[in-house]
Length: 583
Image (tube, rainbow, N blue to C red; front, top):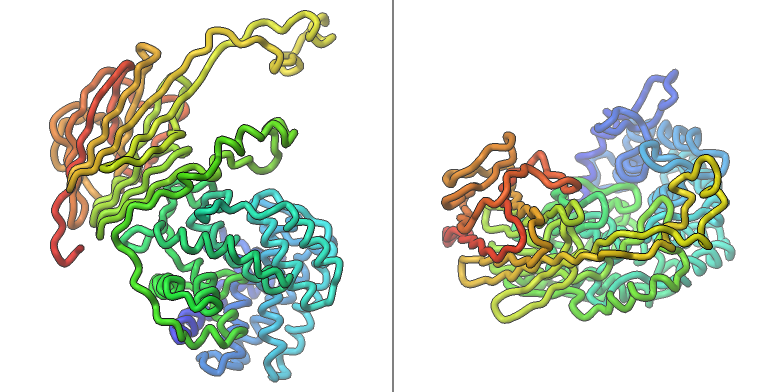
């Protein structure tokens, strides 16, 4: 594992140098540009600090091809001066594309920079002194913003705690411990089954995990590791057979993005060593197998492995990871109780520059049988995804005109051969505001709608809409029974969204555009690589090509089924047999 990490880190030394701005007249002089936009940033993940961590890990490692390389040192010196120039007077940095004068983004850099600093200080090469002093100055400048700065997402709190812990370790700051304790006093946000608030298996789960691992050590609070362990155990069941992490219900920007386990390498490797846990070691092995980059500044694997030599010798034998399971997550989580207490919080469901993440703790099922992998989910735009060999049914969605848009499933019940999901929507109308509750503007020449007390309007003619889906699994056939009683004549659309890499080879369709087709009859067959799905059971009850508020993906193949309430229809999905070598 260690030798591969060194090789991967070395492979990214020159690309970082190739992207460094060497024009002394440029405002970005010394910075490392981002491939996506061509601008140098002080960002931890794809910016200059990420390249600096790579260079530092190579410079001080005798096993690296760039050990004490003078050219790399010169580039590191240019980069550290760039970072000092772009650091704001308040000690913060601005990633550029989203957050400005950002305490949490600064905290990400602090966590990475502090580890790089410790790594360089531990080396006896005197030529590193200028870089070491500059990094320490940068870190020292961040102290005010770390002691006063806030956040706007749940995981940011734990990043700030880790950063405060590192600053305390380097500068002996009791006030950093006080600030970290204020964040931790809010309590951790993981369910008993291991899910963090943002339901972000591809990005922010791993962020919370590694930051709390650092915080537990630096703040001397080992109890913080329990929530991390729960998440790492949960993630065993949230990986498709090809190594892709389940992102189909994420509450963040990794939603539907193809990502792998590489960002989990450090959490798994560190806790496998700490706990002597064979499952964690197996997941660390799975992560290193798909890793092709050492990671951003806070999670550079080469830096951490050098700082903690225990990680270099893997003494725990990895367990065999499960390939057959039917796992219900958050099935017993009292989510309804928590939601019922939201009014007590006093925020009236208003939150700025973030979101409340009320989908936190919603039930999810992960099913796997060798090379067949399924996710059933609630509180998401899709309620089912199904992978079978190379064939990917990325999402099955229900959308309707009742409350135009997707109908998320709120309840999930498991039974012997499958599951039942249901989604209920309620919608009504609102009467006039009582005279005693009207504002003075209602008597003026102009009475703006937004100044009326809408929360005091009486509800009238409330309507209810429910869609129920029974998902039954028998061998290679998945049966989906859809039911809805009304309101009568509510146009509904069921969408089957397949990977763009495959193709439809039979069936009857009405073409909407190059990626969207209305399924009008016959058996629809989708093929990709070594596998296929066959769908049977469509009927056409309306001709609408879309549902307002429910956008269709452009980089997938979408099959539309159009019904009108009330309906009780069944669609069967048959899967191909896979070659013995594939399962």
